[in-house]
Length: 257
Image 1 (cartoon, one colour):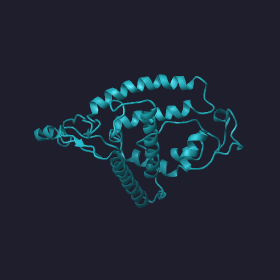
Image 2: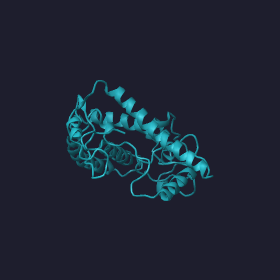
Image 3: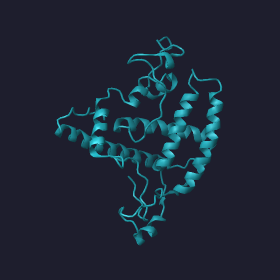
Image 4: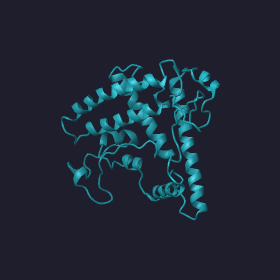
């Protein structure tokens, strides 16, 4: 979690407890997650979304062209092992294990996107990963790309994706401008603090917020951010696991929530 010191709170990569929800609701949600045998990314990696090329790239396994997957199975399948439609990634709900895989997959795809489409830093800056709004937008764009270029997608789907790309680039341009990140320096996205929140109205905080951090090694920064994000999620999981054990509930699996 980054914290800006200008009367604004920095971009938060993960928040354990959603605002406005009671502890009972939160615990009930986590218990439901704990009892779910297959998480979103587990399903993704086990080819449940019917995207053979991308799944093979993620898992390092070759897709069996002679397997049981049949055209139209995304809509007609039934039963626990049936394929399900591609779904968006809820970045807040990723477990530590899922996040460690998914962020690297998304990073590789974003790097491909910026190179193939010649996108400059006003659309995709080096430290896009440190800004939540850019992570959400690029993740959504990635999911839409997977769906549009699936072998069972409509022949017009890639055209529709490029139309969405044009809209996305306009949003990315606006959000990059607001975020304060650039080619050689970065600072946390400013978020206006409300009365009662820590550091609200602190005069010295506004002066410090304008100071950007130089970008010396983009790849190293991504690895550092990834480790921080995974560690933060793992800490939340350990807290939840301990709470469930104290309450006599089934403990969470060690691989993540």
